[in-house]
Length: 240
Image (cartoon, rainbow, N blue to C red):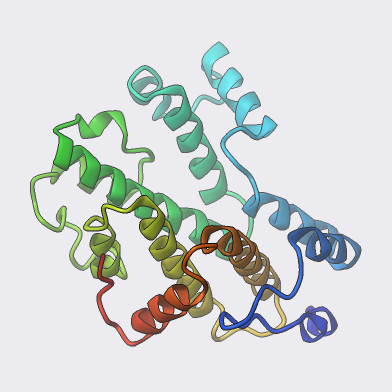
C-alpha cells in the first residue's frame, strides 16, 4: 500500500491559482501520516548546509582520517566554508535515502555547479574554488570551462534550459527560471509513479516552491512563472 488516501486528499497544485495551503499545514499532515522511514526522506529533502548533521560531519572529517571521504584532503582547503558545507550536504544527499532523493540532490548539484562555472568564466575566477562534488558533471566543469557548453552536451538533461539561465542578469528573474526548471523536473520524475513516497516528496517540494514564489512574485504575479513552465514543457528555450 502506498499513500493513496493522503495524496488524493491533498489539494491539487495549480500554478494559475494561489498556493492552497501553507508549508506548516502540509508538514503537520505528513508527520501524522508518513511511515518512519519515509519521515527520514522528508527530512532529507529539507536539509540545508547549516544542518547539524553537516556540522557534525565537517567536524568529524576535520578531526580524524577515520571515515574521512577520499575527496576531503583535496577540497577542504580550497573551498570556502560555505561551499565545503554545500559539498558535504550534496554528498550526503546523493548517497542516502531513496532513489528520488538521490536524484533530487544530484540535479540541484549539477544545476548550481553549471551556474557557478558560468560566473567563473564571466569574471575570470578560478573554477576549482567554487565547483563542489566529485561526480561526472563537476569533473567536466573543472576541465572545460572555456567551452560554450562546458563540454556537457549529451551529459546533462535540459542543458539548453540551464545554460539559458546564464543570460539572465536579473537575479530575481533567474530565481523564477530556476523554480520553473525544478518544478518541471519534479513533474517528469513522478509522471509514471502513483501514490508513492516519491509523489509525496515531489508534492512537498512543489508546494514549498509555490509558497516561496508567492513572496517572489509580489510585483509581477504568477503569470511569468506559468509561462516559463509552459515554455519548458514545449521545449522552448528560456529567454532572459
